[in-house]
Length: 295
Ligand SMILES: Nc1ncnc2c1ncn2[C@@H]1O[C@H](COP(=O)(O)OP(=O)(O)OP(=O)(O)O)[C@@H](O)[C@H]1O
Figure 1 (cartoon, rainbow, N blue to C red):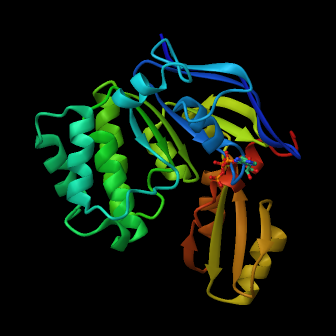
Figure 2: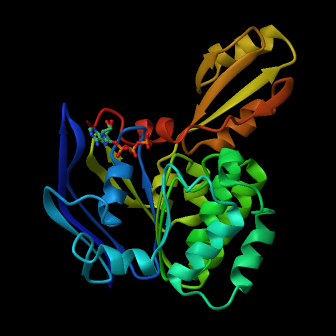
């Protein structure tokens, strides 16, 4: 059963910007990654789901309720992390959390405490004095503290350090196990790979693909940087072996691997290798490979 439904959503800002005839759905208990480069239309889509924008054409619904007509009811129940967090800056974090608790009619505070501990967030300072990362933590606590069944998260880890990013991923995995329905926009492939069942890729406001994470991973091309002990070895490796290579410096070669990792290991065994690294590919690089040329 679909919980989040977007059908033929269009909002044209001119010059090819906006979202165009977008349709996809997120099933009950599904974690759905919403990916795309800057300006692709992720936030615009999410703002329609939150009922902040009225569709020019098409419809959005959550739990069977139209997102525009029933925005107040939806916003009260849902967990939401906005892409850009702008709080009432004069409040302290503590005041703000209490304000939201009243709005949501939250009677028990265990979950809030657990989230504050988990993210090592001390809410006592003024929001306006908080760093981007701290505001992000406040946003996470607000989104999860009423234990919502549906969560919409717009780049939820932006501004968090790697330790906290990891804690966030663990939280999403727990919520996934508990059957929550989550739509999460992201630039981070690792975050999506570890948490999502399916992924929708948006490009220029249009849905380029919807696929399972496994299918996306299978199509991923990996690049390794090999540092050799001497330049002659690097040269021989790059010129003589039947692998897709590119020389970076005298000693370093990049090799592109599809399904032939065993072959690479066997070849490397014959060379004096000083170091091997696998630079993380940006999500954009991965889907440029995945959808190469298919504009
Ligand atoms: N109110 C607006 N008026 C005009 N253009 C807009 C408006 N809001 C967004 N846009 C444009 O629509 C496009 C999609 O923007 P959107 O914020 O949805 O992208 P995004 O995928 O969330 O990007 P990012 O990852 O950078 O947050 C961009 O080109 C943006 O400049």
